[in-house]
Length: 111
Length: 109
Image (cartoon, rainbow over all chains, first blue to last red; front, side):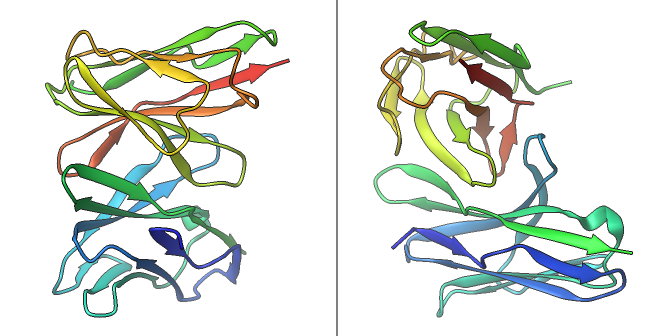
């Protein structure tokens, strides 16, 4: 089993739609969680951190469920510019700090 | 501005040649990472270094080598032993989040 697993993509949605991505992690020692966005042929960039209480940044909402070991990202009112790959990232410390990236979920927003 | 630089952006090599990818950071971070990304795939960890003069193998270290003689620099050598070297290589350095360089796209023919 992979340490971090994401929904298989791609997701194809119309503009204005709401779309949700899930990500599960296997290591209960996981300490911090993030969503990154990666555009085609570019480096990943931090979209938002994920806090235990859940957090929102404009149209984006991130949730963390430690008991079930998953995080989610909700995008409301999708824009064409949201088309990208979204990477789930988990940091954990088991005798050494380590960062694990999910394989990413591709989102296509169409007009 | 603090950040990570990678050079060159595009690199072409013939099969059988070793090639070294540069990664420099001026963030004063201790840790540095090398990832590989293949088309439509996620990031896979090649090597990482938590401190100067120390580095550890990641999940796909075979065919690669690194050095960490200076805090600012973490070069990656893709050796001829790497069977499928054509890929997008990303250098990163974490504090709370991962900071990425712009990447080097290596093509081996």
